Length: 139
Image: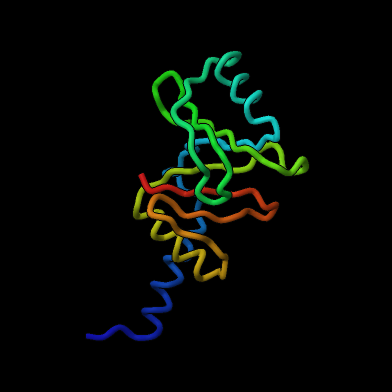
């Protein structure tokens, strides 16, 4: 028996309603802050706050130098990214983690709503209404 258009529409609407509900399966994974004083800021977070430097590298979306820092349990929770722009300081990126299935549903919702995003092997990147970069990782 093939599904009717009413059945498909009903299933589509149920999926849409489910996607609108807040998910309890989303975790804040890390925060990324941009700074024009990278070396000083890195020293502050490591020396003053006691975060452990997890690694130095280049941010995949901005190609700027970055430092990843770990909490007491070894989780990467904070990222510092160098910025050449004095006005582009402060919170730059929020990283969320969610189950792979939820990421798949999120991708479908973004496509349906025409919201642009960029995929890398490790994450989906998009911007919120204020331009803050959001990183979504499958857990």
